[in-house]
Image (cartoon, rainbow, N blue to C red; front, side):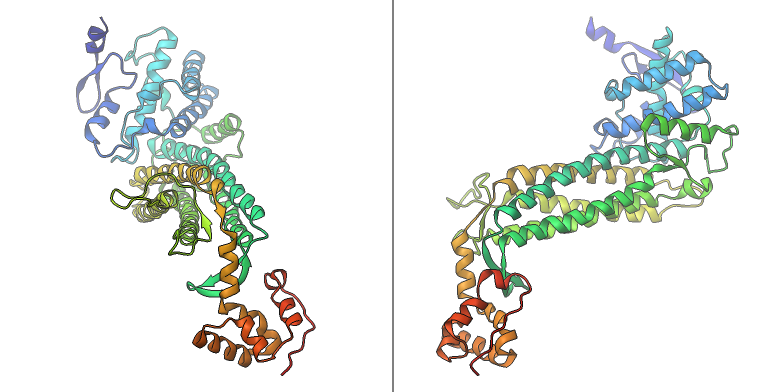
Length: 477
């Protein structure tokens, strides 16, 4: 019986001709053509629920405005709104199977939403799917709209929802670094510049540095995301508002503000806004900044944990899996490594977004679908990466305190702490002799009677080497 139902079809037609649509499908003929034409990637619309929800919200705003202007009956508007609310509840998402990467500047995605909402509205009204004379994808759900304003508006709303989610995951990762900074605040270690010994610091300062440079990026993400709240609804085809009635744009945006609770506003110039995708360029760039910093941090974690016996070995990363099919006992830093690869992907996606943003021609940018796909994908990758890095790596990091301390004790770099007291020339002399003889800086300073042991110990106290201090110490020379 189920097999028979799955084989039943209904006939729908469009400009190109007629097609048989599976009776179980809530989408229609234009979605079917999009499925057939764009077998491009594995990135399908139904994998991006926040974008689907944003499409529903966009159609809700349009329905409210159209009803207020007398362009929809109360029954049609109510049915469209109810269908959209069901989508917001997570229903019917499987009915959005189109590829995110598509020609037509997003028309396939827009029609996918129009057809699903129209067919569900028909059922709510007591009609059959495909009986579009009662509620049409084009004449009713898409009333007063074009793909060229509805699609980018949905992208903006979907990306703003995604941004709010991304920041929460990001803040949890930052907090994890901050907790480690507090845990390691007492552990003295050597700082390094250009992979060479520099001056002492604490391991806590290292992790606090990680947390602080990431926290700085939240304001950049927020700043970039604010542009998503400006939309071009009412622009219709190219920004002139053709087919939309006076007051439609303002009423639609007012409805979007009420539905979302955000300060959604109408673009000041709809013609300019319809071809402009700079908000996607800006937000992708903000994510790229995060990726660049995350990449640096993960590289540092791998270096600090290198070893276990022939590397730096200052920290231990949690052992997650055997590291080799041939080398027994080897454990690799697989979690920072996967975050590195996520960062490269985000950086690559940003290049795609930048090139696509540049590709706008005349009154539209036909490349917006791949820009949207890249931005949604980058955000998802970062969120998954943040959670994986936090739970499987950062939370479980331990310090090798004695290793850190021994590097400081044996390092020639501590001579920098003596420089303000004994002068650059004497410091250089001590450093050179230490290199040539293998003796320690501490030992040589006492051997040459440059400082008393008491004064030397004071200068080299950990707390005096990790922050600015004023010491009233005079050398013996």
